[in-house]
Amino acid sequence: MLAAIIAVFAVIADQVSKYFIVETIGLHETTPFINGFMSFYHTRNTGAAFSMLSNSRWVFMVMSFVSMIIITALLVKEYKRHKLMTVSLAMVLGGGIGNMIDRVRLGYVVDFFKTEFIDFAIFNVADCFVTVGAILLAVYVIFYEPKVDAELKAKGSVEVKDEND
Image (cartoon, rainbow, N blue to C red):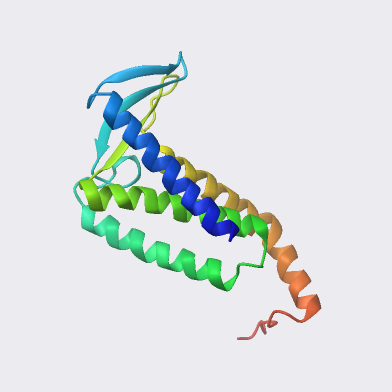
């Protein structure tokens, strides 16, 4: 249930923010947000992260769809494993769905956060969820996964793998 709430929240936050940008800021126009730090710049991204491989929409849609199925399967199978794993995967899933909605509906992804203090890619709320979720997942895998595995092995809940296999 937690995963569903987080994923749905991510999708709604992403789609509402994109709707606001499209309705209030013209394409390729800039509006100040946090002076000297960030502005809103309405643009369209036809590629993947940071506009890589633009105009390969179908490749990203298939890759995203497969990734979302895998993440959903992990959430269903491992939902009681650890809350940090659940939260991180749900964030990645929700962000992925948010951008997938744009790709299917519009043929591109609406991006709008532009950093003013460094030259960086323009991004959106879904990208934030995917990035933070991926960072949290890395934290989980590095710091918590070994402990969770050890606890589950001690309880007899996980198969112990033979090193010779």
